[in-house]
Image (cartoon, rainbow, N blue to C red; front, side):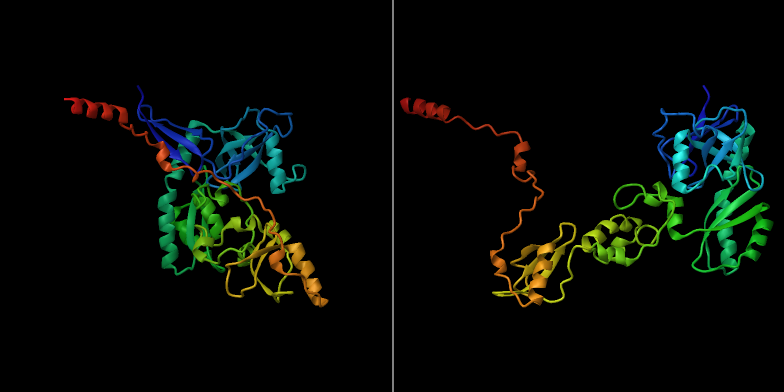
Amino acid sequence: MNQESIQYDCFRGCVVTHDQQTGETNCSYRVGCCKLEAYNWLKNADDGTFSNLFEVRFKNTRKGIYVNDSAQSIHQGDLVIVEATSGQDLGIVTLEGPVVGRQMKAKGIDAENTVFKKIYRKARQTDIEKWQQAIAREQETMIKARKIAAEMGLEMKIGDVEFQGDGSKAIFYYIADGRVDFRQLIKVFAEEFRIRIEMKQIGARQEAGLIGGLGVCGRELCCANYITSFQSISTAAARCQDLSLNPQKLAGQCGKLKCCLNYEVDTYMDAHSRIPKVVEPLEFEDGLAYLRKTDILRELMYFSYDKSSDADLYPLAAADVAEIIKMNRNGVRPESLREEPEPKVPEFVTAVGDDSISRFDAPKRRKSRSKNRKKGNNNGNK
């Protein structure tokens, strides 16, 4: 029986097996292990469109659309040799069929006016072995590159290194706050590693997407799951949602503000547009009512006659508050706020605490009193 060593490569979404007896290296696509993975929900609805276009995935989040001009039949999960800027690269086909058109539309790619790079053929055994040898150099190359950059005094961080499939070129992903003159660095890298060098600057959010991980919500990081274009996020998004400005809670694993802060901003902005701005307390016949808090999504504003206490709060709809402000400007004071009926708002009701937790315990058996009485009567007769 052949003994195989299995290695899971989550950076490229595949499983690599090495046969110790024959020395062969096999690689297979592992669904669910790809960053920026898109589910092919049009798999069984193939209408013949985009039959020659395929999505090819490389390391981490680097993907591309390639055209198949060869006569070979290519399907999802195949390892293919594709055209590169210089030389050839090896990638895994992750999507095929009509869903490729949807992906191009989402990325803003025009199928008619774009010149796609070609898929030459399926990868052979020699291609896979050469690819694995190049991958094995990535970790050591990254460590050496970081040391060289530190010795040259450059304010940059080498975040990742990706070798091309044929091993003739490497992409160095780096992070820097400002502009870095790395012309001399490229010469040193070329002499040290004997390969063609490409430097690619990324941000902190993109670095988190390359590394991957789980967020505080328990789900995969959005930057590694589906986000491809990163928008600017400011503390105004947190203020708009009435969140606590705590850097430890608002920052993600990249050290920047969480991308999910932008998800509900539009909803909150729409609600804010219908909530009036209260600068002064509302005037009623029995006194002044001060704004204590606001429920933005429910568009409710809570007022109290006591400026420094939240003991007695009276809710008012945002539309009613705007009407009262207009009345106050015209010198009209409404009746007492205490007489306003409290609006009926559906609340979350749970029945978890209604029963005692001891209901899960086995009921204790009670001794029968009749038996004790009989025993007492027998002892008295004796």
